[in-house]
Figure 1: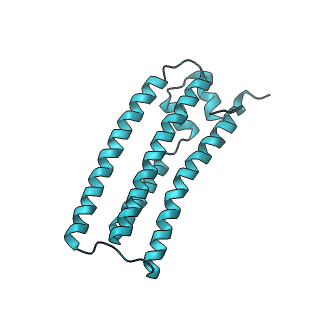
Figure 2: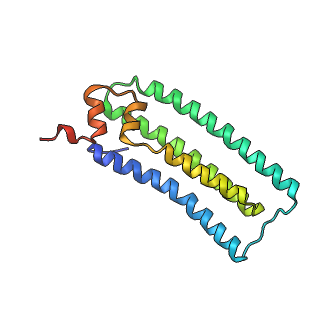
Figure 3: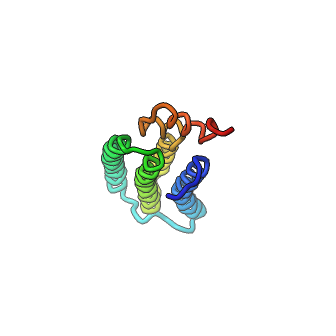
Length: 166
């Protein structure tokens, strides 16, 4: 990612994350509206299939999030050893992009589950997924902690470069 200052870096990072957050929310809200207005009806109505899908979705979500969390942890550990703040931030962007894309796909997967079943548990799972995405939001403090920044690099990232301006 090309950036000329830390403010610009976080601006671009937040925009990329917001797009990956707003797209599944808008899709889910559209499906929810169409479902409530009666324009679409659930494809699956057998209760045992709905329960099976509900628990299967939940298990797949936990497995996927665990795998992504381990991959992200491993990558961040290796990226924290890289020399140069600019290079670390470029690599961090790739890690955040992976994390956010995975959460976006899971959210769309939940929207598809709601479309097929019309069951309210999928909207609860979706809300939990959006909440988890917001917990994982890359703030300057989290960036410095995850990249294990120290000294001037840490201060620079936390203040977005303002600490060293005259």
